[in-house]
Length: 277
Image (cartoon, rainbow, N blue to C red; front, side):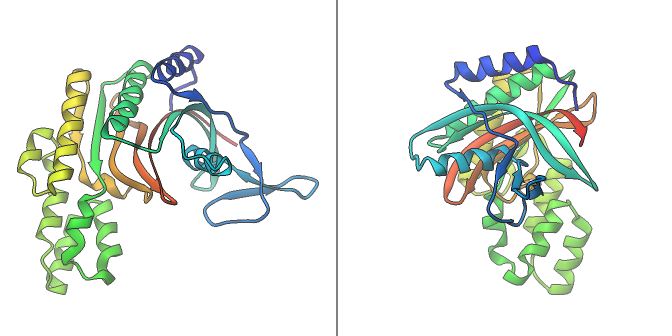
């Protein structure tokens, strides 16, 4: 994680503001009436229960729901989220965007452009932008028994080609298309190979459009296709992306299209300074 540079934070929000994104501010701890799965909580000395902010997307959506709004919401944020890495809670400073609802493919390209341009400014590079698409699996799993879906998806997520081949043999099912998706995501990551990949037409068209946009807009970055990215976060639903800084061998940004509680949006975050709490 890079150290916080205030001038670059200012540059980010100016860039986002130029695309019509408004600032979004929220407290890191919000009062709560009860404990729910997936959230971290603490009690203050007076016995009040607080939920710790671990994800900005959910915070923005909660804010939107409280306002009962259905209008377009475009916001940028710059603040800490609090997450566990192993046994330790870490405060990670993030810069990010949320565009809700996602109304067109241009919304996705807009978020991708702002995140990529800002990441280029903040990190030494060179950068790799990996792109994927969650809807690949809707087609792949049709011939797989439902009781094996979770196991197969976990094997795809870890690119475990050997276990996929073993499962295919012992269960007597054809997993050759899934094997090829994993092999392509390991050995044939160039967007030039997309045309030959056995993917649903809408998925292929969107990935080709994203790769073409990135290559034309940012000729100094490398664009790679990794269709196993679709399993990184369950709420993603559509085009997704990650950005790696080769010089530090670190994931420095991520985002994509999502659907949470019926609300469709697109967003992205840049990961900056992190400190153990």
